[in-house]
Each structure stands twice: as structure tokens, then as C-alpha cells.
Image 1 (cartoon, rainbow, N blue to C red):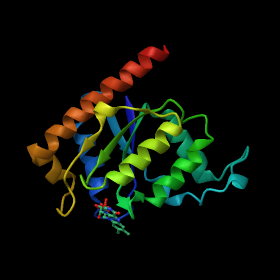
Image 2: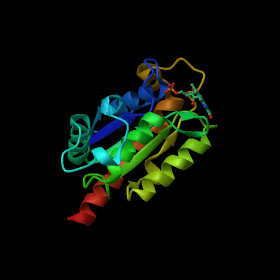
Image 3: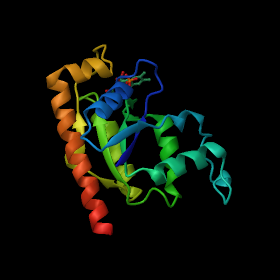
Length: 180
Ligand SMILES: Cc1cc2nc3c(=O)[nH]c(=O)nc-3n(C[C@H](O)[C@H](O)[C@H](O)COP(=O)(O)O)c2cc1C
């Protein structure tokens, strides 16, 4: 099983990216979580460019999403909304055939950041994603200098994340079983 991890933060020391990398370590056996960091290369969404031939970075993202069994997203809240770079990526996936029905789990690295999480959930539901509510996790990383290793080493962070990844993998298996 392959899960594409997408961080809504482009910051080098991002807690969201760290959480996704930690999730890769904590995922159950047989589950590969790989980083998709191509969202920074996408052009701004423009319906005029969303034709039969799309810009190469868009094509690459759609192919990656199409080949993934699920998507794990972790995004910061900016000004009570979803990070623009992530929303731009999602706008490019609205018209794709690869995205609808895709299993998705969300990681929130800041318990106070409820607005972005709510907005992201609404957007994903509108795009016909299958959100694994049990596979989502909120981790209190805001303000701490965490990297993937410190998250994995701290049971208070690692155990909820490990459990969420187990439930997300089970959710994906169920979705795949329903479809077959
Ligand atoms: C421009 C900007 C706007 C922000 N707006 C909010 C906000 O509305 N609510 C909030 O809880 N945090 C807000 N934050 C804090 C970020 O969500 C927080 O620093 C987050 O951990 C950054 O994620 P990262 O470590 O992955 O880069 C904002 C940060 C920046 C830089």
C-alpha cells in the first residue's frame, strides 16, 4: 500500500512536514508513506490551463495521486484558512479523474488551528474524497522544535500517530474491498 504525504508548509523546519515524515516511520508493515513535494512547482490554478494538455507539474501530481492508495495531508493554518499552496494544489485536482473517491487522512499539528482543518475538510468532501475520520490525528507540535525523530521518540506523540496510521490503512483496505 502506498500513501502520498503532502505538506501544506514549504518551510524547511516545518512541523507539518516533520509529522508526515514521522508518520512514515510509524506506519504499519506493508504501508509505504512517501513525500510528494511537487506542490511548490505548480502554477497558480487557472481554468484556461486546465485543458487536455496540462502543465507538466500538474500532470506529475495527478499521476502521483493516481498511483497512490491514499493521501496523508498535514497543513498549517494561515490567517484562519488553509495554506494557499495546498489549496492551489487541490484546485488543480478538482477536475482530475484521479482524485474523486481517494482515501484521505489529515494531520493537524496545532490543536488551536480549527478553522483551516474545518475548511480543508469541507473542500475535500466537496471534491468527493473519502476522509478517514478515525485515521486523522491532532498533535500538539506548535511552538516545539520538533523533527521526525523527536516525534517518533516521544510516546505521547508517536502512539496517537501510530494508531491513526493503523486506522487509516484499515480504512483504505475497506475502501478497496468495497470497490472490488
Ligand atoms: C502568515 C501566518 C499566518 C498564521 N495564521 C495562523 C492562524 O490564523 N491560526 C493559527 O492557529 N496559526 C496561525 N499561524 C501559525 C502557523 O499555523 C504555525 O506556525 C504552524 O505551525 C506553521 O506550520 P509549519 O511549522 O509546518 O511551517 C500563522 C503563521 C503564519 C506564518
